[in-house]
Amino acid sequence: MLSIPDLIKKKRDGGVLTDEQVTTFIRAVTDKTIQDCQTGAMLMAIWQKGMVVKETETLTREMMKSGEVMSWPKEWAGLMVDKHSTGGVGDKVSLVLAPALAACGCKVPMISGRGLAHTGGTLDKLESIPGFTIQQSTAQIQKILGSVGCCIVGQTERLVPADRVLYALRDATSTVDSLPLITGSIISKKGAESLNALVLDVKFGRAALYKDLDSAKELAQSMVNVGNGLGMRTGAVLSCMDATIGRCVGNSLEVIESLETLKGKGPEDLMELVITLGGMLLMMTDLVSNLSEGRKKISDAVTGGAALSKFQAMMEVQGVAKDVAQSLCSPNTDYHRVLRKAAHQTELTTPADGVVVDVDGLVLAEILHKLGAGRSMVGEPVNHSVGAELLVSLGQKVKKGVPWMRLHYEDPAPTPDQIQRLQNALSLGTDKNKPTQQKQTLVKEVLLPQNK
Ligand code: URA
Image (cartoon, rainbow, N blue to C red; front, side):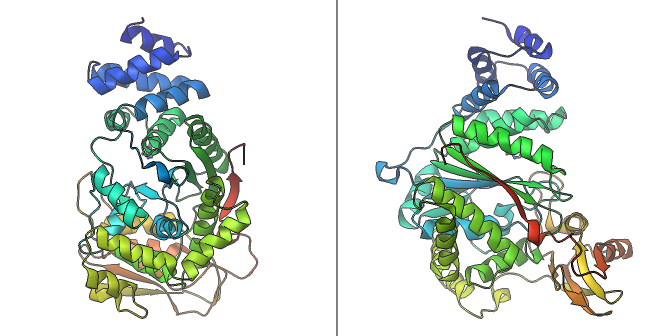
């Protein structure tokens, strides 16, 4: 058996590690019998030399097995599904998709994350609802799936401990952006949920982690290969992340937009993502026979109110008081009776007549982050009420001086420079057909498992 320094040398020199060698490395990480400097050196060797599909699959499987692998009652076989997104701006898909899938008969143990850099986190959004408890044990998750069908929770301590170690050291050694390491990190956690089907929303564009379509596609293909290799039917969509998804960005504003969507009044782009991702999962679990049937079933679950009932039930079992959950899910409710509204709002107005051809989602997200909507350090609190509402849509004709964005803020207030940058995020054109519209090309490509 090779020693750890020999394994590092083999990878450093471009060798392909055997299954046994990958296992030795991950066991040593999990058992803490390897020094951090050795792990860091191996991570850098992997970052530089990459891994073949087989190595990545073994890495992912061993990471998955480093902790608890969830198990489910026999009668749920075939129904366990989840989604992962590589992170976006205004990405509230999970809040609508999880209950929609539950309404269609799936079991959805959705393990989500917090905001990372400028991108928002599903857990932060849900925590803007008073009482919502994201920390649930595996036994509680199973109970919730039995009664409601879906939950949205944080990662438990026992799930994939090797990833916690590797992730921290990747951050410290500039090795986060490595295809096999990202694949291992994301897919091991989904594998530990013991899913039957997984769909990945891999974003590309200026507000995404991967800016260009080709590199996003490479990541998507790597995760699809490994997910399928681990026995989960895994598919992916490549979706554009230039502007925002929907019109609201910021934790409690996004909860409001999600609830409006669950009441049948959601923006088209958000619905398109929910319907596509959900339709794929229904098809991959064989609950429907083709994608268009799956899309229709998800769409009906949202527009017909079944998904809203699931969301209400999920809130209640995850700690939200019954009257609060009921009030949020009632028609024409005043959301701010429950969700705290920021102390200040200001509206930005259009500088000229024209057609809205672009709103830079990255600029918007970065400024909201600075105003407190996101965190700079793990564990830092976020201000749930900070956010922005877009008051215009791409392609819309506007007159000079009409409000196009409402900014919700507290302390710190936006500086004049931040206001100017926000104002510059809006591009007005003259040609209504200018092809910068994100909404027309939101889902660029769909990758399905080979047997589908
Ligand atoms: N999210 C993860 O969980 N891991 C990564 O490596 C990147 C994003």
